[in-house]
Image (cartoon, rainbow over all chains, first blue to last red; front, side, top):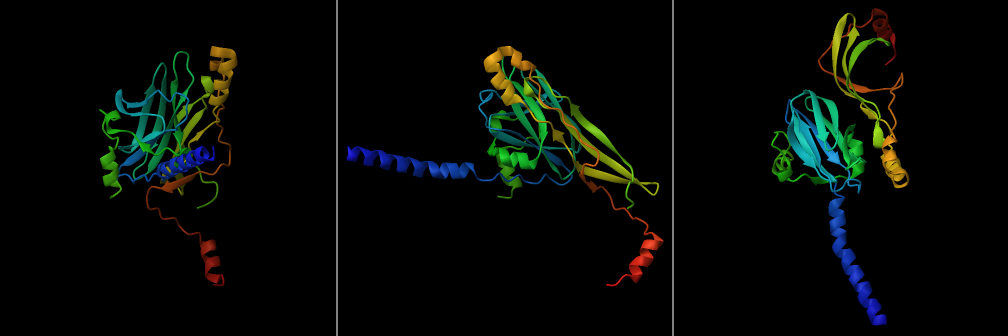
Length: 163
Length: 110
């Protein structure tokens, strides 16, 4: 019996050891590169809650998809300064207008709220502090971006960070 | 710059609270201040705000009341008078120094 306990304990320790680096990697702070000179950028993100986890939050501008946001993911949109209006849509639409300033980074969060037949995305203004607190640290896959330009692909983020 | 100078801002985005616990939203920007008959352009005002969302409450209500939980609304946001917002100047701007202030500064101990 004691032998079984030792095996269970050893397996638990091994599992914890294997899990630890993963947890540590997930907690690594996300570094957002500054926008190119004269441009502005918006970090769109989504928290990793269970509510509507299976749904994507597709961000559009002028009828063209910029990128989808899965649960717990973010993307960086580099764009021209000025007023921009973004739309998310499922069984209902939601809009968010932002004033993009040159050389500044803004934040916007998508949440999935309850709907009649399926979840409804809700796009709202946010802050860097909220983004950090949310712990969102996975960049949207390149496959989920576009065709609208502006959403930085993973390799472009690495390049912008100078790595 | 004298206290009480006036200026102009703009509401970029406003949305009232809605069903399913969605909160109200407000995004403002500062355009300029009127100083000595001239306009000092401003940029990068940090004053977007959202009200408290009630999405978790709506979700909990759905367990008990089904689709009637869609009627649960979030809270609106109110930016009260006197709230401080940070903005940047968008250009270099020379301000005339008042004579009385200048003479006081000369006589002041260092």
